Amino acid sequence: MGRAHRRRNEELSVAELLRETGATPRSLDDASPGARVRDETGEGYRERLEQRAREAASAQQRAGRRIRWASATAGAVVVVGSLVVIAVTSESSPGRQAATAPDPLAPATTTPRTPATTSAPGPTPMPTVLRQTATSASPTSSTPQTATQAAPPAAPAVPCTVRYAVTDQWNNGFTAGVAVTNTGSRTLTPWTVTWTFTAGQRVTHSWNGDFGQSGSRVTMKAVSYNLTLAPGATVDIGFNGSFDRGNPAPTGFTLDGARCDPA
Image 1 (cartoon, helix red, strand yellow):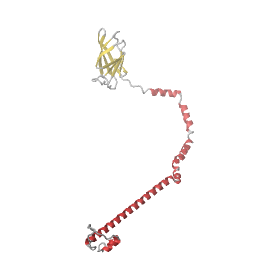
Image 2 (cartoon, one colour):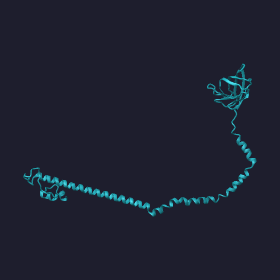
Image 3 (cartoon, rainbow, N blue to C red):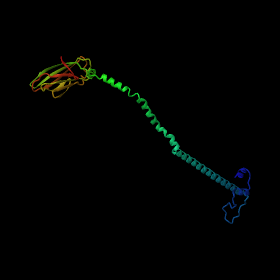
Image 4 (cartoon, helix red, strand yellow):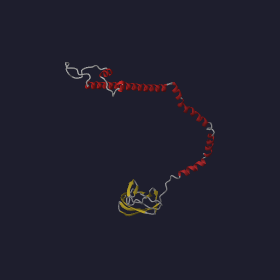
């Protein structure tokens, strides 16, 4: 092959080409066995020999490349396998296990020392706390404190006044009006007025308030056009009712849960 490359541009003889490629002279045409063999020194014959020589050289180069690729692949596989074996061996070796063993035990060695340093002065403040508790736990001092702490939960009262009047009455029914004035300093939105009948009266119809009755207790709630009751303002509620055993005035008037005094 080296000689063929060195003499690429030189003219080669047929004999040299045969020696280089190891070819055997034969007939190069498709003529019948009885046909006369061409002249071995012809130009076409020489070109075919050169073409075959180049094909043989190319085949050898391809084979060489395949061999080199296979060798490189096998070498890479061997290297990777060696690295894997080394890694597995190093992970399972006793020396590595001995080196990594103290890590999880480090907190265990430091934990006992921390309570040891803090437990020594621990018993000293305990008698002091007990003495302070004993001196401050007298019945006379704790009772006023409990009374003062129970006072704040009480809700502030809503001052109000009320005027009740029967404007009409017949044998078993009546018409009445309830005027409630907000004498406090807070605006109520919405508001609720309640009272209690004492003779079994019943509300049958109302205006300026949405009524509800449970037993003898009547509830009047604000409607859409009078939801707000400002300080100093008065709401006039009217209703029709029925009775069986007389019609005395109700009692227990409240405004949003606060007792109302009669006006």
